[in-house]
Length: 201
Image (cartoon, rainbow, N blue to C red; front, side):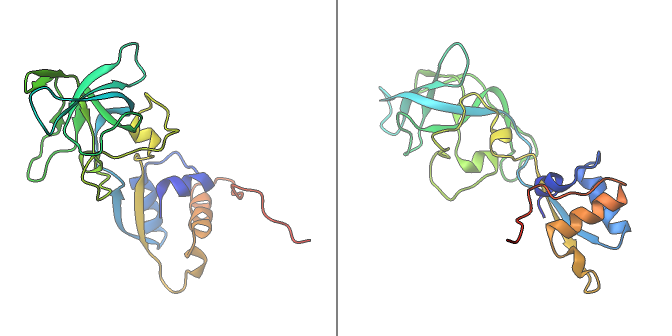
């Protein structure tokens, strides 16, 4: 069950962990609680404005990227699918990305030079923000993605998945509606459908 989906139905002033504990105490055992994506920060939606060949590296491109600030950024990128007009996650200087496998420290993005050309950030693939899409290259976002928006907000990554073990005698909880009703009762909150019910003619 998605935490965000549950909160569309009922939204107690509790963390996902507290909701899970509350459900467990009510007989709906929480088997697992996982984050949709690992923690990271400083990544926004950017649009590639220009893309030119790196003067000293065949596999690198020099891009100009709009990230919603007063100045566009020059970023060197080696992804094969970088192109003018695409919208992608951009890790700004100072961003903290999820640690690589076998490491426990976040990967910090710094200003630097790649083969002598200044680079102010990094264009990200899905794996770099724990949203692996199986593509060898950048995570291409929809064309209407708003430039400058925090990628965690845009992709709704501040979310948890609750894995709840439902016993056979609690058939009423085999749905989002049933779990939401239970959470509402446990917290003394009103319960109403988050949409207009379709009425029979």
